[in-house]
Length: 362
Image (tube, rainbow, N blue to C red; front, side, top):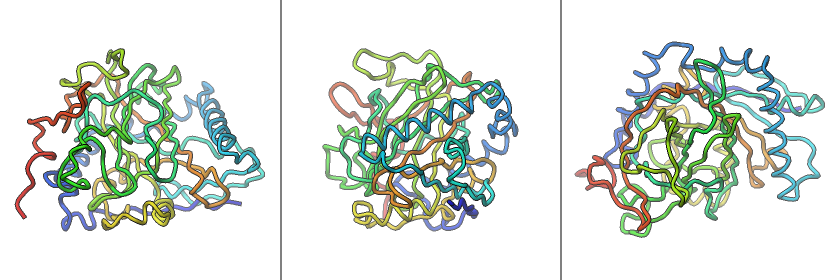
């Protein structure tokens, strides 16, 4: 028997005291921007709940559960964990009530859809977006940390149909809170110029006919002022790829939507106790202290569902997580990159306006 609990996400606790997670980036402005988007967006476009009956009737939900179960079992076999027959699942999203999951029931029920992250058409992409990253499945690049495998499905909020042949991009910091591709104060060693050419924990994939991509990465770490999260960006239809597995037009990048994926606090706490993450000396901002998450969770459910690949609560063997992203694929908006990743390496954008520009006065 597995207990699925819930947790409440409070408001903008701590936001006033920590305005800039990264120098030059105002968290309060980003939170207010996200709140404005959610407030003016029709309810049907803030959630995929209205799509659930249609997706179930068309067999999409059954296919989703089968795909996730198969992927998780394949990962166990790859890691010599096939002898484990039960998966441990917990859900601490504030949108789900307490529920007992009977492990003797159909295991596919563990992989039903849950969280949905509705991506905003004009919400900031954050201070460390790098344009021109690689199209690839595995973005881990041997970064130390808890393995994380993400199954992401893109769904049209208007038609409730999966969105095929769209490019989805993810990026996040490593176990000690450092983003690749950017050299700036507040992002690891500001004198480490080689990080400008680094590409770890960043990547792009094109959705399948079912609107699905699967990324292999590590569980993100944390940095001051923000809770643990993964950035997500979907590119509009018609985006082209180059022969070198990058997207074209990196200097004029556009996006359909931008958003962030979050994780329940109990999972974050468990990961943070492992060796690599414990070496992170930056203060840990919890979910209930994160202003951007407060705006998200007040209306929608941006928490990834997950199962542990190892036994019971043990996270060391890895995690398999999934989430649906709702978008209006007709949208297309300009995105401002901090850095352009070119064939010659990273090139700072002089018009970025934030990091990696000069630090603010102390």
